[in-house]
Length: 116
Image 1: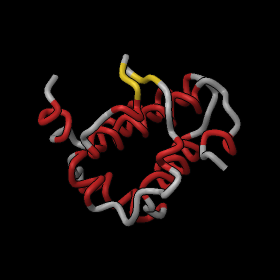
Image 2: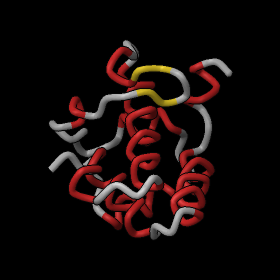
Image 3: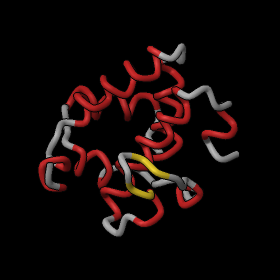
């Protein structure tokens, strides 16, 4: 799958998958929302509005109020790629969110997931 195709995917579709992944491991939708809001700067209403508008990934991240200044602390491998080595900023943010939800689903404490 090319980056362009990923960028054009509706964020709402991916959001549903992220929530399902977390819920299968005993985590809550609200925790996924907290992770997304932490990374992107959206508040709960802003996140919900983006989901309802069915914006694509590119719009979701480019319209984000502010990517968290601690996002650079998100490191590790997701989908076989080191997050910190991704050069495209949009793809890096997409993979950062994947990594955060993955950590959440694996049972990490919220403080550690959010790099507190």
